[in-house]
Length: 460
Image (cartoon, rainbow, N blue to C red; front, side, top):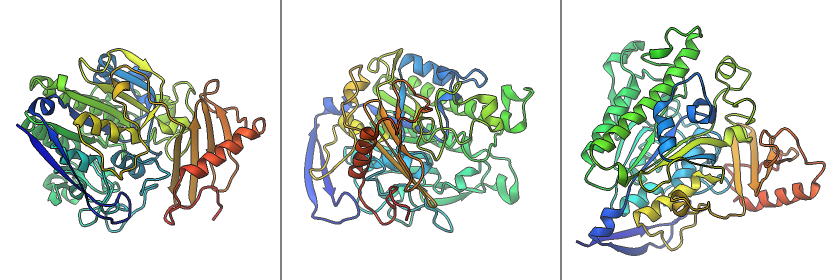
């Protein structure tokens, strides 16, 4: 049987242009060899939360198992260190110097600044390649009446929170079923009877069960452990001599772990685990500083190994807990420090799906397919980030083992050698002005000017 997929593409970012038509014929054998593609994005989990990375107090047996059975990454980089631009980088294949979303921008009464119309996204690519597509959890890239709606960006099925403000609540009065607001009666008038994560998990498992005989793409944007530290059951942590917040946080991480386990169990039960790639990552590192009660209890810096947390440009904010699991394909037990970033996943998934990219499409990413199979990571000139939060406009760039950070808009650039100073404690800027100048030039070349996102090199 031949499948002919007709691509109708318009301009990549913010512009409309002539349609481009391309067709791809995929034989039945080729179609059957294409894996299911799952990206699990945990909101705010940090490397130091996971047992495989050294956490001792919080139990994560499923994530630890998948790390053992797959490849664990020490240098997986987010799109940038807050929610909306991190996931937008994944969805567009663009780093935050080119991505149309480079910071959280609230829209009242509900939602965030939307992805612009006519973008090529990982969702639209895979949908056109014949994949069933779904997002469960949190979207945060545009409400349903905007161009950023998941249903306008290649997603067939959505269930969960659209607005990230709304997603702070784990006992919300409503969720969205596709674009329809669904009331949760048990949570009306401030009641806390129904844990939203359980509803989302049930819908996800039902969808996967129904799609087990098809190729599917699943973006599981799980909200745990972000937002209010709320849990329906403290479980094994209930009797710990900890604060309620500490017990809740640990239980949320373990709930994340067990829900990933329920998904993996279903894949194995349906006999499709060996034809399914799971990539797991956090989205922007820890949401709390190491000197806070939670930071002191759980030591997400892993003994000071990584500096920084959410909304920053240091490695503790940008490096994520991450692994890939694909039995029989991704090497088991491999641990690698070779870097990759969220914007690499779009070209990776496109290659695995046999989806041709439009002729005029531009991505900052590189396919990770050989790397996933055990080869080296792609060669590249640099990794670039910027972030816009209120009046804060900051940026960073990494090339080879050098890392340059501008932690304040218009401020000086710091320089670190990650090969000898992973904790970014020794600023070498005064000793290597040549490298600082090089970094500034690379930063300038890595971004596209956009009036919505001021140049971090400027104080205005």
